Amino acid sequence: ILGERKDRRQMTGIWAGIIIIVIAAIILGNLK
Image 1 (cartoon, one colour):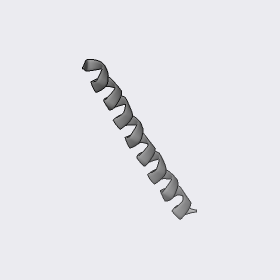
Image 2 (cartoon, one colour):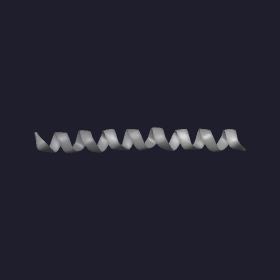
Image 3 (cartoon, helix red, strand yellow):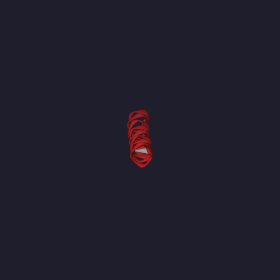
Image 4 (spheres, one colour):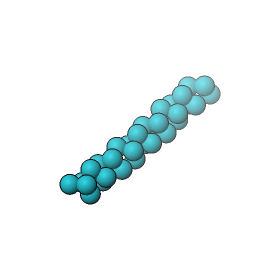
């Protein structure tokens, strides 16, 4: 159970990072 919770937390962290990078890329693209 603890292992699953840790993996799920890692996955959400990875997805959050990807979303932040995508949003940052879109904002930078609009600034150009």
